[in-house]
Length: 172
Image (cartoon, rainbow, N blue to C red; front, side, top):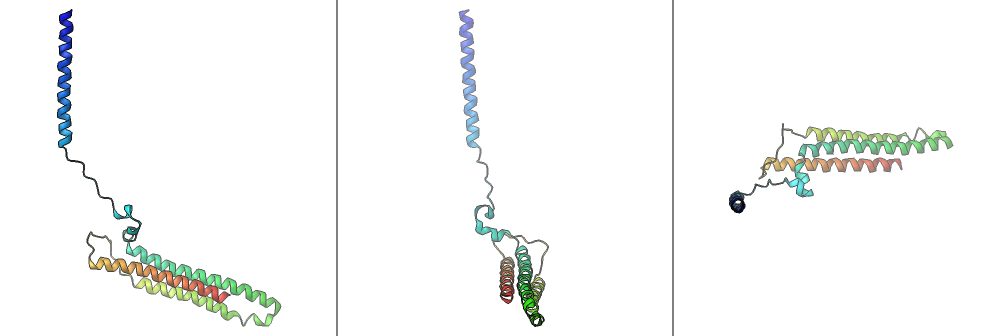
């Protein structure tokens, strides 16, 4: 029995040594493996400033057109509401002046028409392409297209808000 016991201890120790050797080889294989390449994250995931580059310039252009048209019409509607309510109030007290104050409503409508005209002009300035992709070093046409998109957005904002305030001022 003692011989069997010693033989089983010897088998266990050789088995443990074999496992230890396998573990060393496994560790060596892990160390020799190159680290997994880490994919570089896109710029717009790491910085808010890169959002301007990540959004298509055509999107910026069409947002500018929508703002020019939409905010101009809102300004005209607000001006017509203010002017119309004052004409109705004045017409109750003095009926003879209601037809003379219709000029203010015509001015408010002109604000909306100006927004429509600017939106048409801006839409005709867009020269589209099937797909716009940005390469790592920007080419000159890509940079010009991006700047043009941002400019169209800025023009849409300025036209829209100037017509909004103009419509409100005519109404007041």
